[in-house]
Length: 253
Image (cartoon, rainbow, N blue to C red; front, side, top):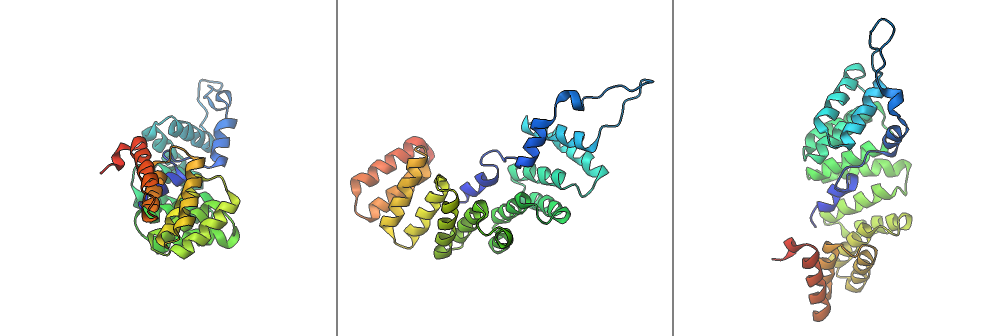
């Protein structure tokens, strides 16, 4: 299994800020945050919250250096500010600097051990460094307090697949799908785990469901091709392979 999808989990191509931070952006009007000269020509000091909001807007706009500068200004005032650490971690994660991202998520969790988004992304950063056992420990910490958390279950399942623990992966993904039955990626990874256990009909059904939910899921077509080939379904295997390559020419070897 490649680790491509885990890269998508928290940013899924673009790492998504937690809902609470997005809400801050939505609720922050320019008229409330712009600088207004005070009497005598002095400019009031920008609040920490305003600095954070500006950082979020810059990060959303792709102005990463400016966003980092603003987040670091927040940390100069409040070295433990969990949202500033978290968003810096998101930037490092997107840049592939996983060890630095790990440090920022850990700093956010030091400020707030119940910051679930930070813990999930810490687990992902550890996974990307191939530190699978510590990653599993982080996902399990979430499940201790929120047993059916779908994102934690999904990531735990994917990590188990990487470790070759397919039965445990299947158990996690089945529970995750009870919470999010329309998540194509969960059906895909369930199909992979079932395939590795030689449960080919079940694997085929899971992969077909992934494709039904996301008809442009090239990796799912590729996995389906392998399952069909193993079952002697040559025509279906060829059709699935052709579709996979059509959607992603890099899959052709």
